[in-house]
Length: 189
Image 1: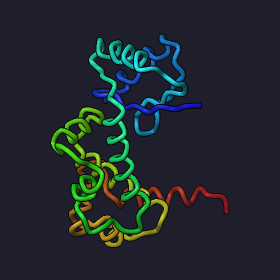
Image 2 (image 1 turned 30 degrees about the vertical axis):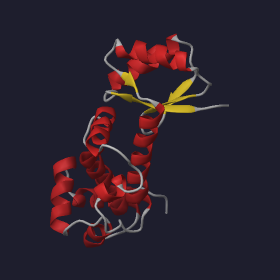
Image 3 (image 1 turned 90 degrees about the vertical axis):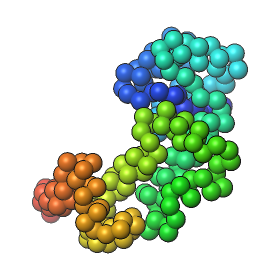
Image 4 (image 1 turned 120 degrees about the vertical axis):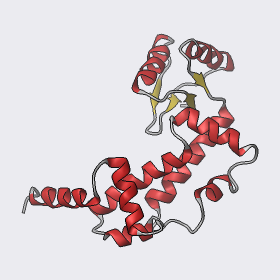
């Protein structure tokens, strides 16, 4: 089975996803939406079929990315996830250096704009969101202290990490430590 993956510009809400799903179902196309919100087609599609899908989506204000831009967005997302979620410690590089390093050739501003159009947030905001999720994971599953977590995720200091965490979740890391304790109490002995 041939599978083609394409991101959709401006598909930034649940309603947008519903529109995409409805259009693809009407067209009788086999597909799924990936965890990173790309449309994965589970059948081979001609350029004409892809153009038809794109035209139908454009009537709703959405747009199917071309193969190259979609692959670029996918690589950026995968790089961010790999570094944040699968590294023992983030590299001593800025994310801009990592993302624009070998991966991107061309106009960085255009690429960052496409990313924002696809994900509905800036790349920096996306990175922060992923770091917040990693903090939760390290608190809940890895028994890491807050200073260790700040070091792993290369925050300037623990206080800055806590402030960013509170700003984005509305909760403190202490809440998640207590949540972990409550959850552990419910585990069978």
